Image 1 (cartoon, rainbow, N blue to C red):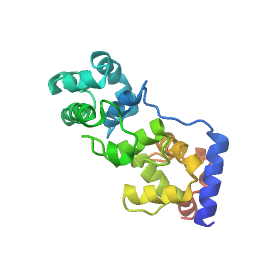
Image 2: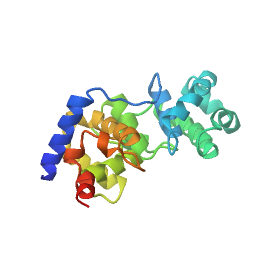
Image 3: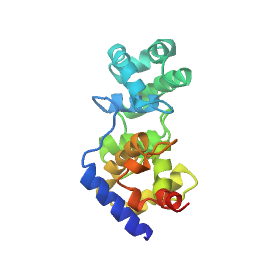
Image 4: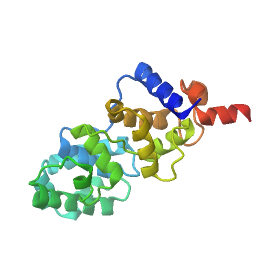
Amino acid sequence: MTKAQRYEAIVAWFKENVPVAQSELVFADPYQLIVSVILSAQCTDKRVNMVTPELFRRFPTVKHLAAASTEDILECIRSVSYPNSKAAHLKGMAEKLLSDFGGEVPGTVQELMTLPGVGRKTANVVASIVFQEPVIAVDTHVFRVSHRLGLSRGKTPYDVEKDLEKHIPVADRAVSHHWLILHGRYVCTARAPKCSECGLSGFCAYFSRNAKS
């Protein structure tokens, strides 16, 4: 199976079997999404969704968050991973949104990456979901699944991102991120992947190698 055939088969399988795939983060607007994605770094969406209702109740807008102290923000997010650094990032992000972007979340990956706490993955998630930019965010799940399926041999998340964007049609890129992340979260798990339950095993390089061993 060529790489092009593998991509075509995998995208077709997802389209047929997972026609609707979206973020599991709960948010109401671009401000809430960028906050949630910053909080989700090395943390579960479930945990983030537990802390954001109170966070957004206390700081409902960018202006409220920028005016808050890091201690007040920290009080709301203590249960997420790396709460101290994330509290500082959230305050800095809100301040920069006000000073540089009129309080609005910018629409390009390059602009988003100028914000504190926003790396390429976070920027791609926001740009894809809010602004329908044809980019694919690569987190640990997407990185792992892409390697196992044989979609990429990239050594860095950026390398994998470029491989995916090269082979996945523009119209399918936004949903492809969610396909891959959810597949990694619930089926192709880091430990003990559920290959016997996976509908992609027939196209999977990892399964093919292990089935023959």
